[in-house]
Length: 398
Ligand code: 4MI
Image (cartoon, rainbow, N blue to C red; front, side, top):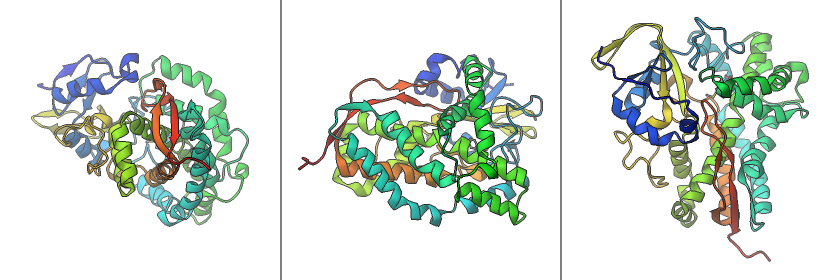
């Protein structure tokens, strides 16, 4: 066995608080390495991560996409019918959900989303320092996403704690997971109830999933669990994507001014934000067979952690990878994964970020970070818990 071994702990508090300085060491270990603390393999280079994500038959999702192997351990909740399945089941559920989340319906909402983001940002611009996480990165998605799903109004504050728990649960059974499981018990129960057909507020993506069940594309029980996927994956991720966008522009003022000078760079800037920010740090797969990687063979039934954020800054793929550069072509990043499981909601995320970005371009001349970004440690997401900023208005108001 020539596979390099490391006792590096990706889940140490200091690493979760600031993961990027460790990624070069991981990439330099080789195409694959053994994490002795967790008895799993890891990959941190772009090419290998992408190849593993592509080869869903060898690197399966049905045994869980966290450290826990569903073949040996009981999952903390009934497995997702999207994320934690393989074909053929995945083809059916993903096909159904792709139709629900189809682009035309989403595009039709963009003007309304832009108006909402613009009114939020207009109220913040010129009003001194505020927390961009609560006031914008959380406020905006919460003002559009639950309504698009058709979710009941009462209890929506449970969405963020629930998602934080779900993302902690992809990691080891550490203190972070134990604490969030204990504190999110109520949120978990609320989400289970909120997914039920009789508890929906009205039309929306959840009702569309139940309509697909009526047509025979899935059972009613499956529909309930597919709605749960929207609630798990659709809020915390976009909250942190938007927070990351504000952080990226605030900490790279030259890039922000470059974008103001040429707003047609907006789409590239969003893609670069997704590459650079590393909101989704890691996801796992499990080997379904012995597989050769380089000169080595790893056995069946092994967990492999894919360091998506490290792959997105691999100098083998990206010139000057640590640099946030809105003019680079960042397409092809693995921030949304790759292959058959690539993020279903990626256009929701992009449209939400686009709505916020166009609001910023309309109203904000300077994004000033007025304090240190506070991270909210999580086993999977690199999150911002608070981000003190000031938006200097770009026009003198009348
Ligand atoms: C990769 S983020 C994510 C995607 C799907 C689900 C949860 C999280 C789910 O529950 O299906």
